[in-house]
Image 1 (cartoon, helix red, strand yellow):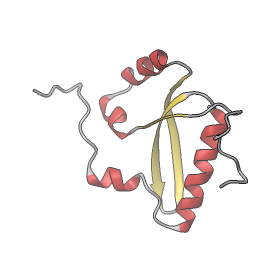
Image 2 (cartoon, rainbow, N blue to C red):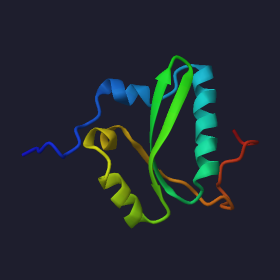
Image 3 (cartoon, rainbow, N blue to C red):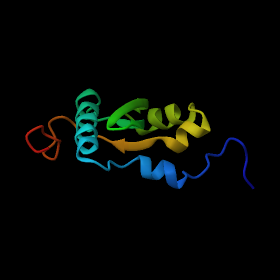
Length: 104
């Protein structure tokens, strides 16, 4: 039985919107990913992406250094925001597999 507090599955349109389709969108996505890494190294992060043509607006909706604190931040979000959010754990800045501008 579903309740109003349970997140709904993402729609096909929402899933498609999470991926870049043009070279300009690929560049915008890479720049947003690099900015996310630089601002939140070693953290658990939840964010949403909104595309307007080739322009990406990324909003970080939750972040924390520990799993517990991150889950508390996620639980505080409205259900529709939790459904739309992408969740990731970013490597520490000095990690061997950390993103590099030269590698992008």
